Amino acid sequence: MRQSIQNTIRENFSVISEIGDDLFKHPELGFKEAYTEELICRYLDDLSVPYENKISMHGVKCTIGKEEGYHIAVVADMDALLTSQDGEMIPFHSCGHSIQVAVLLNLITGFVKSGMVDRLQGKISFMFAPAEEFIDIDTRENLKSQGKIKYFSGKQNMITAGLFDDVDLVLSCHVMGPDESNPDAKFDVNSSLAGFLLKKAVFRGQAAHAGVIPHLGRNALQAATLSLTAVQMLKDTFSPNAGAKVYPILKEGGQTPNVICDHAVIETYIRAADKKNLYQINDQINQAFTHCALALETKCEIIDTPGYLPLTQNRTISEVVRKNMLKFCEAEQILSDVKSGASGDIGDLSFLLPTIQFGFSGIDGVIHSSHFEITNPVHVYENTALVLADTILDIFENKELQIKTPDFKERKEEYRKTWLKENE
Ligand SMILES: [Zn+2]
Ligand SMILES: [Zn+2]
Image 1 (cartoon, rainbow, N blue to C red):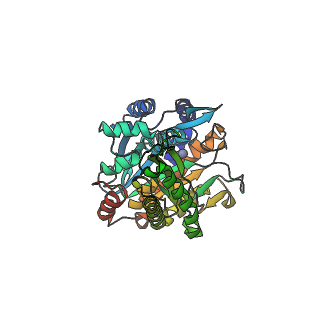
Image 2 (cartoon, rainbow, N blue to C red; image 1 turned 60 degrees about the horizontal axis):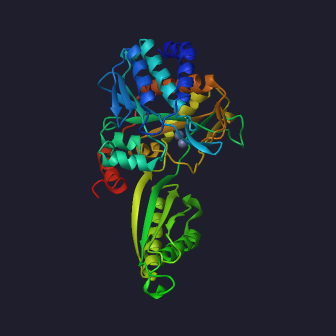
Image 3 (cartoon, rainbow, N blue to C red; image 1 turned 180 degrees about the vertical axis):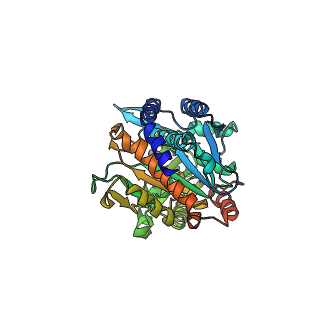
């Protein structure tokens, strides 16, 4: 069974690398992935695999295998992001999500064309998820107000729509940038991502003629600048292990210098390595903003938008993944337990279910920059799909690897209430 799936994936290389190139040349921002969706659907039509599409705008899901038994979801991101090229911001696949789509299509081909689908002791759902990058917020606000999406991330919409309710385990992979300390690294395993939320603080004061009656004004800009100073001072209280990163910007700070400013806006991400620190630091910042505003007799309204929860990976399955990576590289070429300050909506899934997102190399350049080039297509499209295929087979063949989450329902409830703040 294993050999046959591996052969099918290897034989499919030229087809899949062409598809990978095609996707790479058609970058689309989150919730606008119409071309990518169509390409996926066409590919699945050719394989005669039934699917569901238009999920959270352009997401696609297909399931193969038996109704009963363990259920693995393999997830790919679909979207590109705005990347600076010669001073202009244009959509570009600088996070390598086009690769993830191609890898999943390769994996589906492996299981379907080898004829091994019917022998699976369980089922696999392949989920193509839109809008992972937390960008283009105005467009998303618009889609939200039209009722087309509920949340700014594809996976958050898929989770709340119930797509993961009967899933036992989530597998995914993501390209990694060249590592300075280990330029020969081929993979990374069991690494973590930070969590973050987006904060907007609106300060309201009282306008007054700045030359004639400034004493009757209440200065919102001063309240905002006092708040910015407070954030810098508060940083001394953040634990060095918290992974806290708070770099606020002053978005608005007055219209004209002859009027005391009555409206100022601060925006910031609050990032931390784990949920506890994220909540605690967020609370500290909110207290600081509120009280700085009060000190200057102004008001502050705070709007928090959930970003992504920190990614914590499942250790047991990470070891299975590592073992399968060793078929393609030496032990020293696998990075482990890297603590990244970046974030991804895969973090939300890791709060709910055992989750894996391993990294693979094969690009030259810098992630999220215009210098991003696929230099090792065999590694990114083929080896990565083979690691996933082997891991899936290992899990289906070993009952002790079939980890369940008995409190999924309670976790999802908590997620909707305290993170997404669904009813507020
Ligand atoms: Zn990214
Ligand atoms: Zn990414």
